[in-house]
Image (cartoon, rainbow, N blue to C red):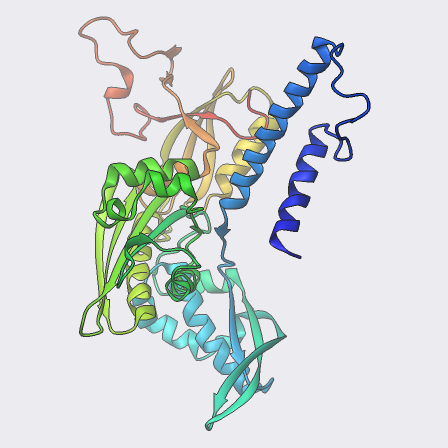
Length: 430
């Protein structure tokens, strides 16, 4: 289908949804009806505004393409369906999944993982072959290739990581908006899109998929190029980058700038902006794919360090949370179900109920920061200012007598005297 025809169909659909007839035209015989009522004109005006709004929303949704990754699935090209090739693919695939789930390349050096890779096929619960148009070179000959898709058992892989005392990075990961800027010969410094540098973008997507990073691609339309010119992106101007990125509502922003020296070496600098902080990484090499993969690996390692969980068995030191807005049993069930499904939470215990407020003890894997990061990513709970103290009513900030310590100042955050304070904002919230 020609692109123009597809766009016309898109607008036809939008305007039809807004109430316009796509067959209506100007009546040459009747001309313009001067007696048309104001109400009719107003109705057309409202429909026009609705159509414009719908076009803007759909265009924005189409532009905010996100690369999602099945964390426990790998794909590889094979020349045959022999058990030998499948065994090798399982070994390579398990290594990829272990790195993806643990969040660290060093996981492959753990002895338990090395032992597990010798029995890699036991972690595969499903595989299938798919035909492709691609080929493999074997003994200097081009042979047709099939795609082998392997699905690994999440429970088996996570059990292996626990045996190796390795962290587990849950599927709830920050979305990453990526701006790529290149200093190209004869083109100057400019934002790179699929049409400008497909090799770089393909390498970026492949590296992110290997590490399980959900990427967002900017539209690179006029609004983007005005908000973030190539020179500003190359300078890593954080204020311009954040302003241009705001429309995409990503959890984190990554800028990768790269260029090639006269000796043929590629050099890249990466700026990661996340949670109000910035980090710089560098990568160099003579192969662009390798340089981009090295940069993505450093970013993934950093994010995994923030969000990956080191499992433990100790139930001491529960995190205390006060949760408001739980007005009925249905919401109570939803809250407990949500909390217990968080990878960082091993067990949730209801300690007290007072009206619409719950006091919960959360037994977690990892430190308090990991729990706070997980809650911030999900947005099912939002911070609240009210606090419950044992044996007292609900206190509000600023209500204590002058010179009296407020209840939440009496202990460390997440303790019984200073609980985490949240309000339920998930399904059924008012």
